[in-house]
Image (tube, rainbow, N blue to C red; front, top):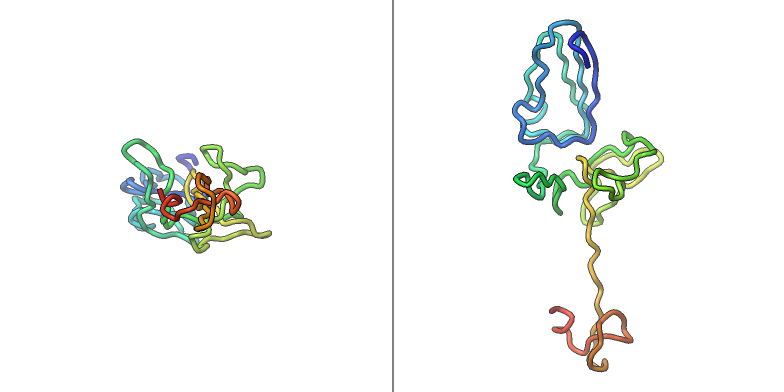
Length: 170
């Protein structure tokens, strides 16, 4: 974008702890156009300073809800389980060559505990999360216990099952 004119498309963003969320003031030459979709915007799309000639448009998938960052105080902007940003982005907007998030983890990870709210794209892929970091769900560990098991099992299979349920839970 230049002071004379320009356009930008923002997709899959977390715009949080920034007031205003969008500062498009000071551009009095030409037209400055910004389109925002599939983004979590604190204060919503109305949280903006628009100058003369500035146009801010909202596409689908935007909302205003705490993204549940791990810790803003330590700049850990990964999102926690239960974040509204999980599986809420637009997978079709992520270039095909992008397969990892900012931390080097897989960019397209489905969280089985979260309903897809975003756009899977065409052809469909797991719905990408909003933000720079993809939530990485932790699979539940399956442990085995049976009353007639031999003592000293590790619970990894029926053959090595724990003898007592409380051993599996500790």
